[in-house]
Length: 253
Image (cartoon, rainbow, N blue to C red; front, side, top):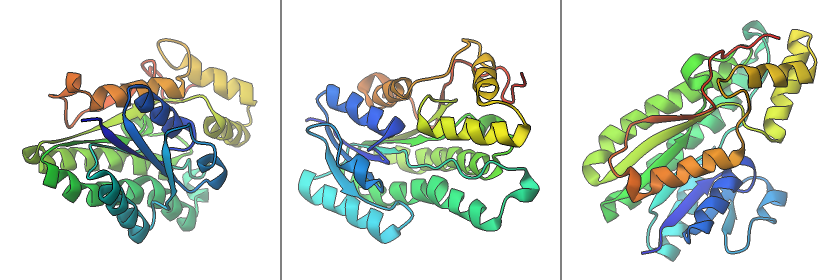
């Protein structure tokens, strides 16, 4: 059977790269996002729906609709996330903290919660969460984001334990700094917070990896395709870091 793949925040960035990579394997792909412009420009053959992952009603309705049309979901990539504020801990507002956790953590939880019964009924499935190296090392000036991504790993390991007996695997991908508009905004904000230039921050993060470069969205997408494949049939409960091997999580230039 052709794999049926659902990707949250799949219309742009890492999510779009995942959609393209899965589609290239012949999979059926359905993305959801809140970005109307990006949804209107998804690749040919990829289904798209407007869904706010913070809304339990919207995510439940979306996944049940996918099941009604496709008959099930084989792969869920719980990918939705926002960068959250870049600020010293004392300057982070409770509102910004909660907004960051709502998308990055609540969104992952709700997607897993509502895909679980669908996959249990089929007796198989793969759930891949997008975490971050910030969820492994912490991330100065990014307390809400690091806290959320750390929690996503705990969520993933728990889901892997609970759903493994039903033939369902769960893993997390931990990207490092991935090229694209979102990391550019992070670098700009961090440069302002540290009194550095954008180029200094960007080059510092690249130099903080053993390979000396940033990742591309396609690097993350390739890992998602692998984790969903039969080649990874015994991989569950794991964090797969795709970052060029971070050797200095808070590089200084």
